[in-house]
Image (tube, rainbow, N blue to C red; front, side, top):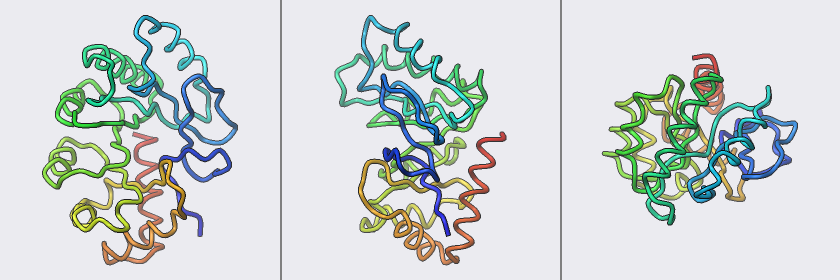
Length: 208
C-alpha cells in the first residue's frame, strides 16, 4: 500500500507533493511552489513572482509554502502582501494553498475570505483551541512526525474530522507509514480506511 505524503522535501519521493525551494526548477513529479516568508526579498517582489508564475505547470498541485511567520525579520505588512498575492494566484489557477504559519494563525484566518480554493495548514502542531478555530473556518490540517510522540497533538488528531486532515513528512527523515499507522490507531479505523480517506480529501481540494 502506498501512502500519500502531503508535504515533503524529498525529490525521489513520487507519491506526494514535493515542496520546491525558492529559485529552483520544478521536478517531473507533483510539486508545490510558493514564496515562503523566510525567502521574501524586499525590493525584488516582481522578480520573485515572475519565478513563481513561470514555473506553474500541470504537475503543480498547490501554491505554497506561503503564509505568515512572526519569527522572520520581514515586516508583517510585506509578508501579508506576498501572502495575498499568492492567494490571488491560487484563485486564478484553481489550486489549493499550503500555508506555513508561525504565531500568526488568527491573521491567517482573516485572509480566508479572500481565498476561493482550499487552504491547508501544513505541519500543524499547536493547541486544541487553534485547531478548532481553523477547522471552524474550513481550513484543512496536515500533521507530521510530532503525532508519533506528542500526546496533546494526538488528542487534536482524535478530535479532527477525518475529511479535514492530511499527513506529511515535511523535512523529517522517517517512514510516513509509521504516521499512517499511528493516526489509524488514534482514530480507531483500519489503515486502508485512513488511506482511502486521505486520497478522497486530496480529490476534494483538487476538484473544489
